[in-house]
Length: 260
Length: 253
Image (cartoon, rainbow over the protein chains, first blue to last red):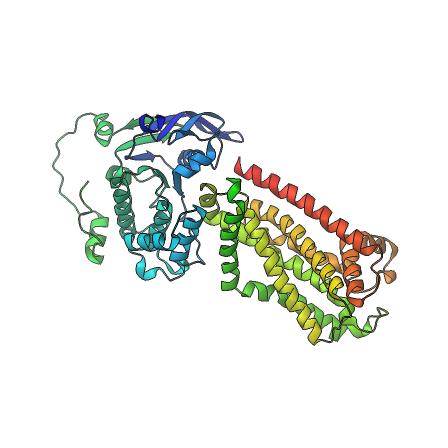
């Protein structure tokens, strides 16, 4: 079956313009099953446009995009069945409680036992205590965790995360990274966009650099590093980064975050 | 996925209705201005207005109902704008649901909220001395006009809700709608107006709607006003629905 042989995300020659601005000028990449793929680029590079095309929110002008074996244009409802999108802004309902948000999405995905599913995810994302509170009272990190939890309902095989940690404080960022790692460990294919180099370095199995509407590099971290001349040995006094200082003072939320 | 249309709309309707029940201030602010206007016109200005009827409240109420609906539908534009802004709209659209459910849920919510607001306004009018001889059939006819008018104006409100750049912009379109009843038979009979104003007033939708509701409440024959009012409402409804759906499609391309 194509589902088994075809990579869960395949993009060929994707072109998209907004009025006169050519945002994507022929984007090609593939994401392997169960891997984390990072699309790296500066603001306005077109990362969000790629995600929107793949999640059927925008139609491309030219090129081919397939998700989980389905064509993004012609088989849009099959694609929607296979994916979930966590957009750039936490797409949660502020007026509802955390639990109500999860139940809402579970109902819209036509799942059985929405309440039970919601409770299990609240537990998994350490939101059980806050489950009855309105999301308006949540911190940025809690919102993002809820957002990602909402994306996991129905266990879609492919998850798109558009700048999942933009605007988060360092602790919340580590929490979200942990959630993404666990998700990948359970076999979900993840395509994420980021403008933070360290985020791609920490999370991704493969990294593609989107620049000027094209993928200009695509490889593992080691492959990308090998593009530059071999490392020179220099002796530099090890200074703690501000992030390390900050986390040391306020206390790290979870252990074992330093392993790459 | 159209086979899920009703189920999905019901789920999303539950969400919007929860929003309303948790921010009852939207219903209070919707009814506050019309009620204040009704008090002002009945107890301050009304004594000097000669409508040729015994009760000025009864004369005024239909126009106040129209103003209530015109200000209430601004919240549909506002809520829709917030959904787009917050990203939850995109989340819904990337899910395997019947897409138009997202709009219909907002529209039905508007209908429920506006019916509650209109009932509140009518109850205040009753406290102020409004009495009606309307029978069940006349009440049903009034309800029908209110429902069709609300649907028409709500679909109209969907357009700025989808296209506005700011929350203020989303609800600003309602101001001309709120103003329209003033140049109609809602507050004073059109006979005293200068000819050009009178011609406009007598041929715009509010006058026929207000006259029809007034006649129904008074138990008088509705004459040509009811069919003209319905024609206006249905016409606006169809036009607004088509334009809103076109805007929505363009938004998704």
